[in-house]
Image (cartoon, rainbow, N blue to C red; front, side):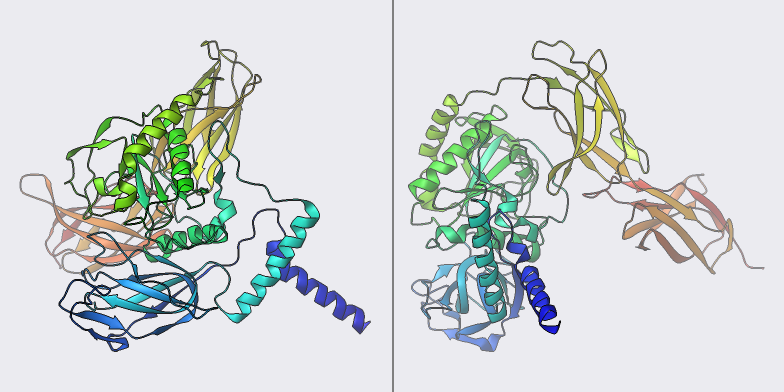
Length: 580
């Protein structure tokens, strides 16, 4: 009996250990992040002429000794506390072979005053730094995305990789990235491990009027087996170290011509990324994985970028050639002040918009040829034949929580005739793409209506699949939701004495503002103060003291943010009277 129990326990343990690998999708090891503080005494002042990495610059600098990382790492970047441009370079030691990489620049832009770009290391255990100067609070941020950080993790990863290979051999090859509707093959987020880099917020949408080309400032000598791990590591660095919602780029292309889906929200949608400060809402961005300041990208990467941009720009009828004028959204890295009209090529380099040398001189010089090739490819793409037209409207674009969104629209065939008895899916943009939240059917005249509950700002669309085949989607529609705020306070208080103000905010928030105003001799209320209020869950409670005897007005405000429209409670009038 004991032997049987032991066998069952061992079998159960093996299944538990191997479970995450038993899938037809590509196997993605467990990624981990960790940080290491770097003290000034970890290095010394470098001799003159070695600042920023040896050979050039003069004036000395700071060079570290060999620093052993807490665990094996695949990607590393630097942050520091105060504004400084340190011109960081790094070399890393391969943990398996003990060999050192070439020195790699950690940033090629003129900003980078609080952090560097991440650099792919691919299984390193130690590193050296060369800096123009040592900044306060220097820290190295690591990502291990290959499941090799510790000896235990290496053993577990090997077990799961073997289990995955066996599972695939028994059940068939895993699904490969497939293009559809003229799209190139694109590796979906699920296949490079985005479940380990979940976005912090739902995607937002703008328009695609231009495209920006980038490079990732990674080393160029990675293998095809590394590409998905590089994308995952960049995503975790962007999200966890930079504090972004998600990976910054809309798409990434490796040197073997593989295209990866970047920021969540749909490859065919105008997802707002974080890769061209001041212009993200009017552009799409593709980053070639590598550093192309002196070395040109591979022919495979260039071809894949051209195919991707031809398809992406064609979705909204944007030409590859010519110019477009947009207004700058500003920002410290932007070349142009807020509101400035800026004219870009339809396909531009990142350096055209922001203070950077990205995408590297070698890649930037290829952009004229890339534009011509994208235009030629786009001319061969057949525009998708319309299968139907579906519209989407909201009775009110700004709702007061818990008010439902009242939606309506109409479905017609390509000739404009109504399509009755046709299913309409109402979808909300989520961190994984679009999720269906309601299903309705069109009436005889093709119209439809739906009521959809929502707590926060949402981006919606209506999707139909006519009986004749194909899929049609409405333009995106954004609906804002203002929180419901209640406020309670006494009607009479004694001037100079503290009293309690309380209330609630739904849905949940973390902070609000209490506005205090006093009625003047002119009969108008004049704001005395706006005081921060901490919200615990959905309730708040604070104390207040009114110094003068007079009629006062209180209200609670919440700000506009990524999830909420501005909110305001009703006004509470109270009179402060003199003591006695």
